[in-house]
Amino acid sequence: MPPQRFALPSEVPGLAARRIAADILDGVLQKHRTLDDQLDGAGAHPGLKTLSDRDRALMRRLVATTLRRLGTLGHLLSRLLDRGVPTDAPRAQSALLIGAAQILWMDVPDHAAVDLSVRLVQSDRRAAKYAGLVNAVLRRCAREGAPLIDEVKSERLDIAPWLLQRWTAQYGEAVARDIATSIGHEPSFDITVKSDAAQWASRLHGEVLPTGSVRTLLQGSVTMLPGFTEGQWWVQDAAAALPARLFGDVAGKTIADLCAAPGGKTAQLAQAGAQVVAVDRSSNRMARLRDNLARLALNAEAVVTDAAEWQGGNNKEGFDGILVDAPCTSTGTIRRHPDIGWLRQEGDIAALTALQKRLLQRATALLKPGGTLVYCTCSLEQEEGEQAVSAFLATESSMRRVPIDAGEVAGLTEIITADGGLRTLPCHLPRDEPRLGGLDGFYAARLVKS
Image 1 (cartoon, helix red, strand yellow):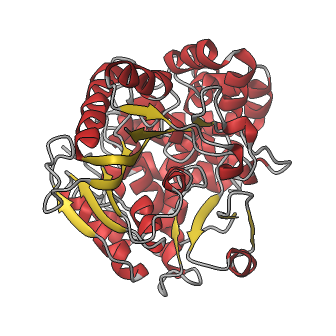
Image 2: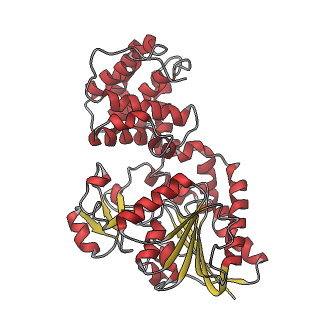
């Protein structure tokens, strides 16, 4: 049941955004719902429609900052609360977390962060009795919070322990520490443009990355930015834009994009002249793909079905290329989706690697002799990347690896693995301004059918 709230005589500016942020934070921490589910589609929070663009952007920052710093916030509140965070009133917990996040990491006056958090608990019947506690703890946080955080290596606290252990084992302690630090920063806004990247970088007050993506720190509603309505670009992390380029020249070729929604890679392939069939099992996500393609004035056939069972539709001769953008733990995208680090469990990996194997086998069956298969995941877990491809090649004699050359990825030798795969990390492309650096964690491999 949703929390019962007292009616307020009038809405205080900024309170609605914080109330919805608290609802969504509760959805992640108490009900294990993803941010995507709560922000878009049929399951989206109904109150989002009532927010202005400015308040919606504030709400997203509140939730993202709180989740990005959740471990540090938990440590801090344990130091400031004699009896721990109240467990009988989730709204009190979320008010404390959101209030402390604003005080320590957001450009919000301390008095406003405290006052609005107190109002947040006052409007909830179960939490109202904790209004005095929230007021006292957050005032103390404003005085003592920063020194308490300086006492600990906070970036390590903000990564789920099982993930930090895995990354240390896979990449070494220094790289794991750099990944954790990178994830702690609010990321930039990356786009893929149809043409003239330099012009769009200028118009959006950004820069062109070596890979060709445009990166900017602009905030606010994406739909209001120049070029969006006209279909001149789409949102896509710079690392996510790399796998589709591994096909080379696709003009006139038939390419199947398996697990395609929401469609960034489909758009890349269609823009490059390929005849694309986009396949995904989610009708809601495929509706977004169709909307995106319509806005971009690009064409692709959209098929709603399970890609692991798909027989290729009307294409009986096989495809020239197949992109397998496989479902995965998505741990490489935590800097953009900070809920993932707290919702995923290590036990999820086994089921996902089994699905990834099925998708590779299905793609091989659908591929023409001589055709190219590009496999990618947005995971930092090597079972879903390097190990998945090695195991597949060990049992599938018809497929061989074609190493990726650094020249295909703008000379970024650090993202090429020893066996010719592609591996990006959140700490790659470092910059003095941390928000302008970094990439999502991706793995990609290129295979050819003999």
